[in-house]
Amino acid sequence: MNVSEIEYRSLVSVSALSRENYRELADLIYDTDPYIYPAMFGNRDNAACLLPILFRDGDSMFCLENVFVALCGRRIVGLLLWKKGRLKWSPELLKRLAAKNGIEISPYLDDVAKEYVDMYADEDKDDIVSLINLSVAGEFRGRGIGRAILEKFFAGKHSRRYELCVLADNKNAVHLYRSLGFEPVEYYAGFSVQGSPPHAVRMRKEENEWKKTGKKEKEPEKKQVG
Image (cartoon, rainbow, N blue to C red; front, side, top):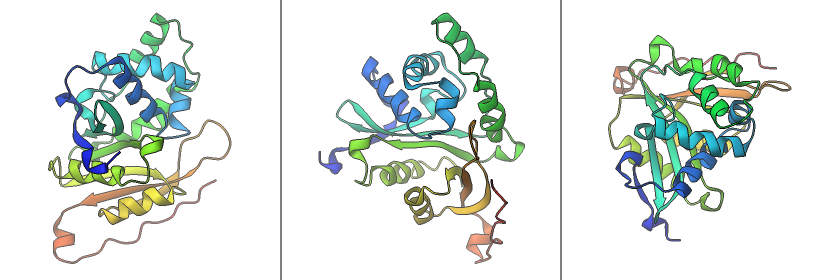
């Protein structure tokens, strides 16, 4: 595969998504975080069944308008799930779909909604684009596709302020985000249903007056974790 042949675009511009495409979306999202999505869906098979339905039904978080993808031919090999402004997401649709399809819902779903998803609902998110998930298929990693997804997405000028959260020990991801202008604004205890919470960092990229004038923000305080 030649990386130059990869195409980057909003998912809504991709015509006639196949069943395989929806499965690719589900797998990429499920693989993004080892804590969040197993707790939300229970297992990969549940996610593969329910996520495509959520996308087709127009869920407020899992919707085609909020996905920017990398395409290799007709295969989705990378994605960015994003949301501008406050995210008002409820797990009730997911619960109804699970019941309708005979799937036992994860006992931790409400915890995910409360402890993780709700952090995207703050009023201060009104003018911010939250980058919720960035994922590249395993065999396509290490080829600059994640960087290219972000660069192509930023070229669309969706906002002057972007924010994301990442596990602090994901050094490659943290390095990538820093190289694209993101800076840490908060260190905190991440979400986990078992064991000690992972160390996480909130990062922000913004074009504002303090950058233009050369002013620097204070180094974010590191909260005690674990």
